[in-house]
Image (cartoon, rainbow, N blue to C red; front, side, top):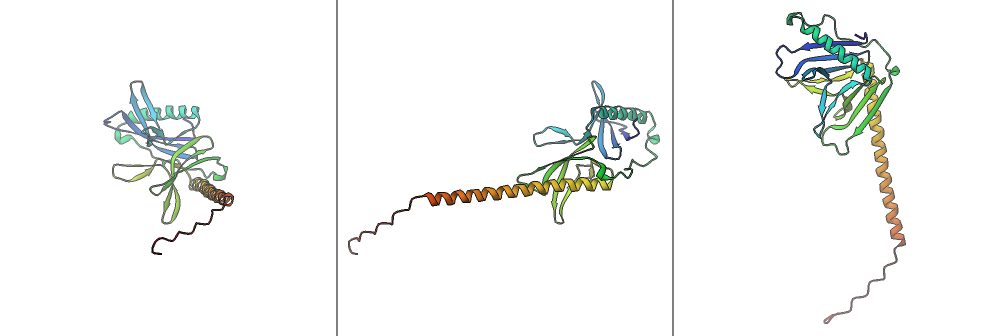
Length: 233
């Protein structure tokens, strides 16, 4: 296994469907991905990244490796760890060491590729969605820009467990990197919002100028004819 990968697999003792286990993956000192599934199919086991469903009914990976070779390596390592954990008695499974943490890497050294998609007419407190690529290695989608009483903040993609508690499905490993991602997403959103306001202002100004030009070029209206006196006036 690549030393930059920390993979944890948790087999389901009595699976009721084709999901045999869940897994979490830490990729170097960049990001963690949770809710990864090991799925049984007619073609054998495969690894499914956590997914969300869009409005058109299609499913999309919430987080995933950007490099095809890295994805293959992760898939193989997850399957190997699943088979190892499955060979143990339930009471023997688990991990003695804590999950991987970032090794103090400076967030300024991490190349971020940020894309923000503002919602034209938000109906709730979600103002935009965003995706972030880190070092051309891993991407996180479904990030939200949220409006609150205390101002805007960035929320990582989340899932809700059976108890109704929300958990991040993917997130930067260090607080420093998470802050850098949040700042980059908010900066992009604010820039787009400012450009949109400027565009609307320019459209209104153009419309005002066109209206003034039409009024200036329109012929003078003739004075209204005096009303002829009627009988009895």
